[in-house]
Image (cartoon, rainbow, N blue to C red):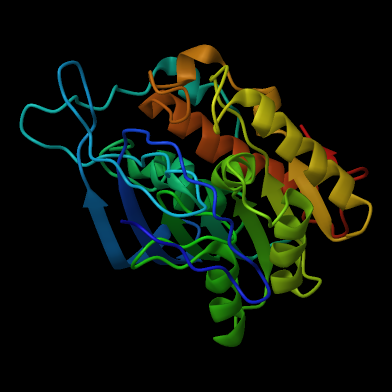
Length: 303
């Protein structure tokens, strides 16, 4: 049986989770771009469990007490498994991003970020998240993306989003933060966690200690269940509500630009073209939220 540990001050729920096929993975990257044309990548850890459940396949499942079963992450190439779709021309239509004042960025995400740093899903390094941030003027990038991650709950061998941020802060990180979290959090609230959405957002904001933060809001193509689009919309509404309390916070409206063709059949994760667009769009949004000339964008939402 899977279990979870809450971050300090959080209380678990006794609600039983639903069961959903999927897989999980972790990428922890520390990426330093010393020059515009040079990227030095240090892969600290990369682990995947399971394979994509294509026709006639059964993916591994994960269960826990008081937490929704995590959605699956990007997959590695395996013999006979479904190959990643090649990015379409649409992935290259986003023009060069403007520049940001954020020269150092910490990106903490769930499985919807794993695909953006995966050579399986994005064989071209120029389309991956690190390169997109570098194009926007970011010189130092810290990335931790883990399948099934939330802000509060933890699976065995995983740190939740809050603890990753706190560890990096304690290790000396100072800079801008990108939180691509919430898909699993709002699902966990749906199945009965007594740690609400606003409390989760506040916990991550406390870890930023007033430094610039850009959230990537959540979106799925599901009509029901813990990961339904209705639950994502509640999460996104609470992000906007939280902006009023945090002048250092902006929200990138990813949900407002997603096209159905970018999704895999699970309705949560993306094709290679979708991940390429997502990486480029996040970098562009960061430059809009915190532009090179300093200050913040007007208003909470970045489109």
